[in-house]
Image (cartoon, rainbow, N blue to C red; front, side):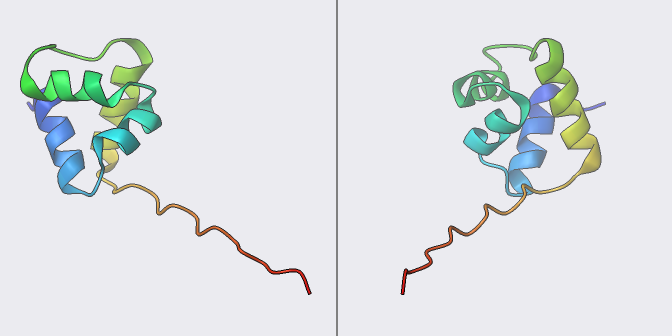
Length: 73
């Protein structure tokens, strides 16, 4: 059984930054860092559910869409 810190570390290994992960689960990067460093034991509520689901899927983050820079003719 992996800890919440283990789950965060694995997702980072898959390419998630704490910022992107925080956006995905609606938690601040600082809160994720606190969990990873052991200052906080676990996320609460839906953030915990979302983190668990992301970890179980084992997917990296979706690529950011390229911005379109169409020039007017």
